[in-house]
Image (cartoon, rainbow, N blue to C red; front, side):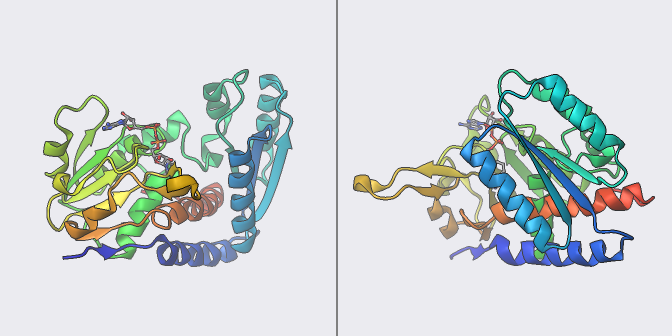
Length: 289
Ligand code: NAD
């Protein structure tokens, strides 16, 4: 048996079509403002990609590219201005920040109603209370992908490997809100294979190439590989990206996301969806469940 492949591109396209339709129903195009400090190449490239896709989806997008030496007080003053500006619907501060700026202070300063990354403690609390709010992009994108491919969540035995604040924890919360039976495994979980073999739905967000091998997966399970690992090419060849799941797992699983091209495309699409949701909420609507 070879697993059904779950590419992200068609699901992301469906989500972006919905984003464009919802944006067109608002009185003005939703505005996303992104802030980045310094010239870290990965951050520059991520923000550029988000900016380009936002514009392509019919949103307004502004990037504040600030010098590395920007002080925390200067950054907080900028955020306060964006919070107060009714023309700004979504605010994203690209992480990581330089060491002299407290990530926590910055994330806590963003108005929760404009927190399109879903990292503010108010939004984290709303997620775990099962109330509508803005949700972290990668986990929310994964739920959209599962729904897009008609894969069941309700009543499934779900195992999330990884407990980061960006992926593992919020993904566990979203699955629980959708009535899955959820286990979270992590670096201190003894006998990981015994836990992962229980999963009908196995989601892996660790950052270790091919941590999950075929013997760790139940036959027919749905496997969501969040990992993005850059591995050097063999014999001096080009480096390439690979996931946390050994591709041989496709011989056991029922469905599996590829890396690259699986979960990756969902994250930016969901950021734009969150920006529209934020604009709708600010116009009196509800957030997402
Ligand atoms: P992180 O480093 O913050 O967290 C990793 C988690 O894995 C930790 O909770 C840790 O307990 C767990 N872990 C480490 N070793 C383990 C082991 N041997 N067994 C079980 N658990 C173990 O990472 P993150 O930010 O959650 O990212 C995880 C991966 O997902 C990375 O490869 C990252 O690049 C990728 N990622 C992809 C997207 C996307 O859009 N596709 C978004 C975010 C992160």
